[in-house]
Image (cartoon, rainbow, N blue to C red; front, side, top):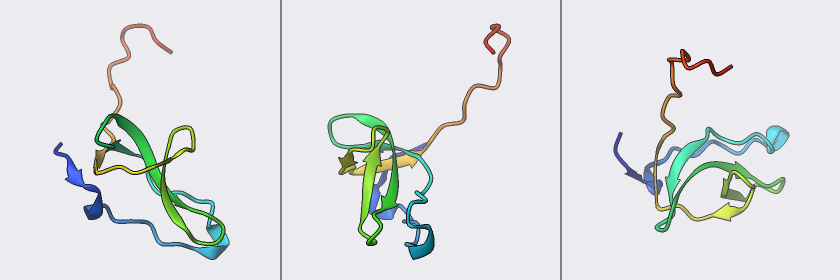
Length: 77
């Protein structure tokens, strides 16, 4: 996986009836740290990136979230 400019991310369309539905979670770089983020809209249609705590963020690059582990032989449930 390679980092891609945030401008290359395909933003989800705004749907007035489902404005609260956010796009897929991605791994984002802000210039200072890496964090999972997603793009969503306010009820009035203003788009924004938010981190996992719902804070507005300004990422510069993104990549898809990696797949989780497939081997659970360590006993984790």
